[in-house]
Length: 536
Ligand code: C2E
Ligand code: CA
Ligand code: CA
Image 1 (cartoon, protein in one colour):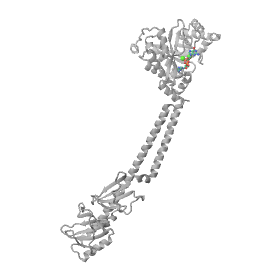
Image 2 (image 1 turned 180 degrees about the vertical axis):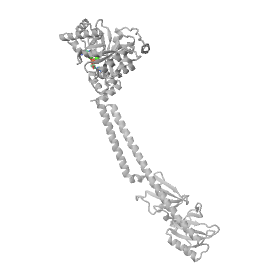
Image 3 (image 1 turned 30 degrees about the horizontal axis):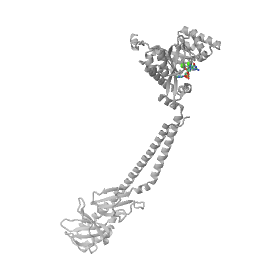
Image 4 (image 1 turned 45 degrees about the vertical axis):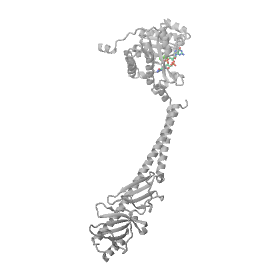
């Protein structure tokens, strides 16, 4: 098992950074949500408070209109009595006075003048004959609102309304004064505040939430504020659940990421897939040699896994996994493309050279291999008739009839098909006859036994006989000694492969060998397939 690579650490560090950023983002949206929610509540408070102030003012205007309707041009005892009754029955009404057209007090409900010096100028109530101003009241400490009914050409009726009564008695609060209300004139002059007497500049300094609502009916406005600092306390539970939730969620996510990265890293199939995609599976080339004259006839492509640390992994260690997992198709294509590109130039000028690839039994289960071969080699520098595909006899073919059909289609293209490891499988000779292949490759086992086992020679002789009668070529594999070469040549086996000539070579070595041993020939260009088709 390999230790975690740098990329794995990078993935995990990247994941952690992403998680932290996500948590920060969630935290930010939580804060935004909390602020939004708090602002909504503040707006509701402002609306309700403004509604209350309007309702109270409305109550007073009605009282004034009623009184005016009974006649106030005279300050007779009945008028004063009516005013007194109105003041007593209306809690928020603190005083009434009748003014002459110069604004001088003529009489009051109390019999003595009310001392209410103006704090602001008087504002006209839109569309009505009322004027509204802020005044001082009672020892000149408290504030009050003077609402004056103006009667053109006559006396006017002025009322003093307790400013305090225009705001709700209690503002839901956490007791730390975090919520504040201010009722002001449109001009900004303060009428009343909650908490009472708090006429400071307000919290409107960026650290607080502020909502302002103006009345359409009276020249007044409400400003509702709360400090942002206390928000976190009030929404503590929500924020905590949100933060905890997102942290737990991401911790799981990170754990999951780590596990899947680890699993993926330790998963041999995923590792092999990555290796194929990273081009770590490379072709080696084992030459096949003419036993009569020692010339190179071509090469068998054998897969090697060149891992990033430079070590070479033999196919016995990954081909079985590739076959089980189905990666063999991708692997074979990658190998073929690479061999084609590496050998193209040398093969194009040496049309007699062959390039042979190993197939797996599944490759002959359907015609996809035919399409693959067309895609990869049609019009390429390596011609179809330079190609050999080897199918091993060791593993039984899933569907003999279909294999036969696929082999015929390959042969139609000009590709030759060989049976590999002949003599080791269970199919026997009848197998070879049914498939109609072009070449048989006699397994190393028989070559090894040539000098020691008599039966081995018999088998080789039988195979040569059979091949000759069926027009098949024979190649001997795993040839390690000159005695074996001599024997094979005498038996009419003209092509051999083995360590006596060369082991599987990297592309550069095989190319050097070919260039040294085989002079380039002009390639005979085959008729294009289309021309053959149209002639048919
Ligand atoms: P194979 O197709 O029978 O390939 C011949 C194997 O015998 C090669 O082993 C080769 O290195 C070895 N060999 C060649 N000459 C001699 C010799 O004189 N003496 C000895 N002792 N060995 C010799 P390699 O390369 O390890 O390949 C092993 C098997 O892996 C191959 O057997 C083949 O079945 C499979 N294989 C290799 N590449 C591929 C591939 O691309 N696709 C598929 N499906 N199978 C592959
Ligand atoms: Ca082979
Ligand atoms: Ca073989």
